[in-house]
Length: 363
Ligand code: ATP
Ligand code: MG
Ligand code: MG
Image (cartoon, rainbow, N blue to C red; front, side, top):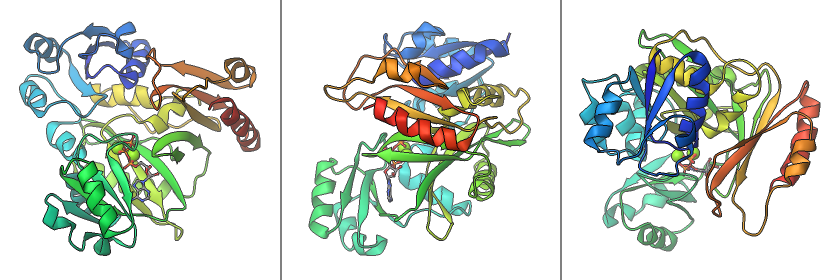
C-alpha cells in the first residue's frame, strides 16, 4: 500500500492520517513533540525535523507532504532528490514568507492588500501613508492565528509595533475594509490537472478563525477558482494549497495569504458528505485520482478554542441535531485550537438557525 510521510504531527496530520487509512494509505509523521495529536493514528517518528534517521525514514515513503510549513529549509533540501516532497521546496519557501508570498501572488496576477516591506527602521518612514490610513504590521515569518501582528493607525504606533514585534523583517499591510472573508483550496496533480475545493465563508475573532460556512452557489466561487487556478499554475503547485481571500464591497477578491496545505476552514468537508480536504491532499500528493470536491449538504464548523474559565456545553452540542465533534488530544491552553464541531443540515435556513445555537454552546 502507498506510504505517505508528513512533516509535522499536529491536528492536521491527525486528520490527514485518519483520511488516508480508508484510501489504503499508511502514514508516518516526523514530529518532535512526544504528545503531538497525530501520534495516536500514525507511525510517529519522535525526533527533531533535522534528525538523520527520521529523514531516512521519510525518504523511504512514496511521497512526503506537510501539515506545518515552518520546518527548517535544510530539512526540505535533505529530502530533495530522495522522495517527492509536495508542495515542493520553492513553493514552501515562498508561502512561509509574507513578503515573498505577496510579491509572488502579484506576479501571478492575483491582487493583494497594499503592502510595504519593512526590513530596517528606515523603511518605517512614510510607510503607513503608502498603504492607507490604517495598517497591520505582520512579521514576515512564523505568524499564525493572528500572532505576530499588530494594528497601527499612526507613525508612533507603527514605531512601537515594530519594536514590540522584535524589529524582525515584517510587512505593513493596509487595513482592508472587507465585506466578508472566504477561502478555497486547489489541488494540482503531478500531471498538472487541477481540482478545486468548495468556496467557504469564514468569520474570525481576534485574528483567529471562529466559524466557517459552506452553502451551495456562493457568488464568489467562480472568481476564487480562477485566481486559485492561476496561482497554482504559476507557482507549479504539486499537492494542495488553500487561499484566504478578502471580499471587497465591489465584489472583487484580494488574496490575504496562502497555506500550502489543508486549512482550518476546510474541516467542514469532513462531514458534509463526499471527499474531504484531507482525502484530497492525500490523493493529490500521491498522484491518486482526484476531481473537484465539495460537501453534498449545507454545513458549517465552529472551532473550540481554549477560553479562560469556560468550557463548551458538551451535552448541548451533542443534543443539537447534525453536530459532530472532533478533538485533537491536546492539553488545554488559553487561545489554543483544541478541536472543532462540524454541523450538517438538509437546508440553509436550518443550518443558520442551528449554527447560532451552536455558537452559544462554545465559548
Ligand atoms: P492564520 O495563518 O492562522 O490564518 P495569520 O496569523 O497568518 O493567521 P492573517 O491571516 O494574516 O493571520 O490575519 C488573521 C485575520 O486578521 C484575517 O483573517 C483577517 O480577519 C484579519 N486581517 C489580516 N490582515 C488584514 C488586513 N490587511 N486588513 C483587514 N483585516 C486583516
Ligand atoms: Mg497565516
Ligand atoms: Mg490567515
